[in-house]
Image (tube, rainbow, N blue to C red):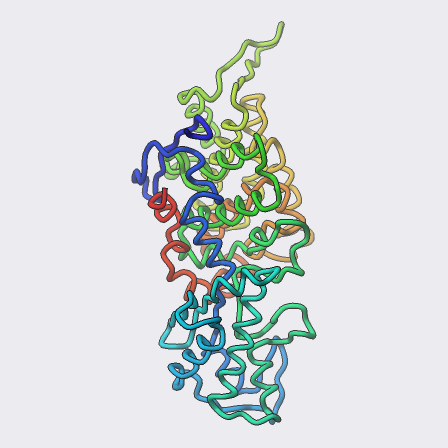
Amino acid sequence: MAKYKDVIDLYDDKGKLLKSNVALEKISPLVNPAVKKIIDDTKRTVAVNIGGMQEALKTGKIGKHQQILGRELNLDLIGNIDAIEAKIKEYVSVEAGDDTQVKRFNGGKLLLVKVPTSRIAAAATYDAALTSVAAATTYAVVEQFKVDMFNANTVKAAVFGTYPVTMDLAGGACSMIMSIPQNNESLGYALRNIPANQSVMITHKNAMQGAALSAVFEQAGEFEMGSAIGPFERAQLLLFAYQGLNANNIVYDLVKNNGQTGTVGTVVQSLVERAIEDKVITQGSAAKGGYFKPYETKDPMLWNAYTSAGTLAATMVNCGAGRFAQAVSSTLLYFNDLVEHETGLPGSDFGRTMGVAVGFSFFSHSIYGGGGPGIFNGNHVVTRHAAGVGMPCIVAACALDAGTQMFSPEGTSKVYGDTYGQIDEFAHPLQAIAKAV
């Protein structure tokens, strides 16, 4: 028997029906096999930049900003990639034939190493994947080229970067989608501590696929931090479905109907019309002596999902028209401000999305101006407060950006597109999740 009465249809980024009559719980991060695979791969997979490591050793530019003249090592890592890959797999494996995987990209310049399940099961945190792959890479190179004890530390520095001077492996050859646990600022934020630019590059700058991948990380994070217990589970699943997974084609329809000549305001109109049509809201009576007729809803959780889907659509219409990511913060704010004025009902995440937008404008490109939208994540002090519905909009905006950011996706996150972006579940989450239902 279905846990919830809600049934949805799942559509792709082209408005094509993928799966109809899906029970709401079938998309849950706790249930859906494709979502669980994305999360599992995120925890167990490490990208190794062999080409970057070879160049770093050749020039002595090891670590983040350091160059040590006289410590250069001219090692042909790419030419010996077969042996290096085999050694890494041998060292990372726990037993022969386990689920360790190594995939090669860009002619051996990049490796994607998936550590065996047993390493994560025997660890308290997911950094066991990063440390084991980094150590295996270091030893594989040292052994393959018989590097002596006086130069082995140079190889180690090229792999581990400035660690342990820094907490993370800054400037090193190994990287994960998630940040290190020490950078997660509260309980359950690991999957939300993923910069927007990484989701942008992994999904090859497809706005709706990027929003879907970001929604996977964000909503799985909401489950992890205890925000989806009891009645709140349905609220989060509805947000995931309608905003992240284009349930009932709402996001696609809103963008299509407003993409040519529409504005943030016309998306508000379209959303309200759709909500009336779907009987999510009904118009009440004006107060005595007044003229404004507020709307009412018997299902505030579903209305919240509609407004969050509308927020994403408005972001795509506005940022897509200007080809700039910077407008995402003002869109998050004023779309929901207009919704509240139009209906008398709360906007996305019951007002918290608007709260995110105010601080976001300041931090990303106002007086403070410390960074562009692409380097923000759901763990950030500004963007963390909305229940997983702010980051998908930021990812979509950055996917539609035409190079206006100070920190472009290509500049910060290219390696993720070249590695994780070649895995179908990451690159096309809309199709993968629907198929796995």
